[in-house]
Image 1: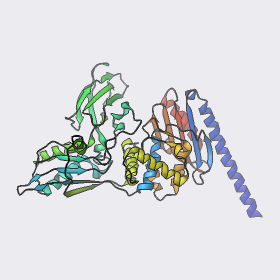
Image 2: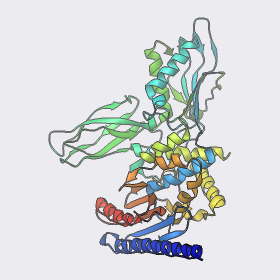
Image 3: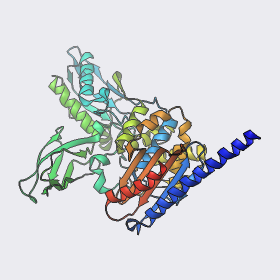
Length: 470
């Protein structure tokens, strides 16, 4: 009898705690919904018990909203499931043709891409651009090659020619965060612009140089000097494979920072840099750098490599996901979603990757595919729509996976909470995990669309709601 009494007492206390938590969230969320900044907006929130999956609180949980970068959590979780935490990408260096007795390669050197998002990235010791260029130059020299009659060819065919996911905007795609994926991505497909502001506001800001040099691009600088404290309002406008970039906006008069822009043709840029590195090492190359896409466009074929002289292996997927979430690298998400399409043995397109993602969660957790109306792997597309319930269900389901610790570590900390943030125009979202004051483990997703006024102010109001989970 005593044991039965203790059980019911524990059940009663737990119920009160759960009810109290729900009431706290409900009151805070009601205040938020009625705030003047949300007069013309819409919000959604789902809070689940992270152990049982039971709903602790939910409002508008089945309304699809733009999720911004919180979508990255679903892409990452899907990649862990379908690719595995130890998955790696391999980029090969080889040549076709023959090497004569005097060291002349009568053929081409070919870099074959397999979709590595980290090739040439400074985030990992083994992927730094100087290290890779040095390694490949030495591999060519070790092969006995002293001169090359052909080209340095970047074989970028694997991911096709569609580099931009559906729904990406013109204003985004020329900037570093709008760099599109290539099967031969290089240096995260971005480069730096170094400006010098004028002495007076409103006068042209001088573009001093680019890092690295991009001599093959025509960069049209229309940037003006902005007011003190106005910061970086520079936007780069370009299209995939374009050789012209327009720079517009303002660069603060007191600003001292590099501005990053996306590389229109990263595969070509890699071939161009390797060619220059070979020349610096005394290995002459007879023809200009070129990509497989360009050759195909001109109805020119090339022979596949007859000899592979180096294979570069990427960091493992769990290390890619770490920076993907920590620094919200859109490019990594687009590589992951295309690699998911590749793993699914279909044509490698973003839409096929999205289809595989939706099918996976429908089979595994019974999540209606229509609850994930998405267009990319990063959340940059403003056309994405996802429900907070679907997102919370995904995050709840992965807690029992052997790789969960790596996923959890990848989430940043905001407001003293382990969660991924997301923001695009008039959209702010958060999703993650929290232990409540009564010890209940929680998983949550909170999104708002079409708010008005200051983003910093509305963030603090969202944090006030999220603080009830602590």
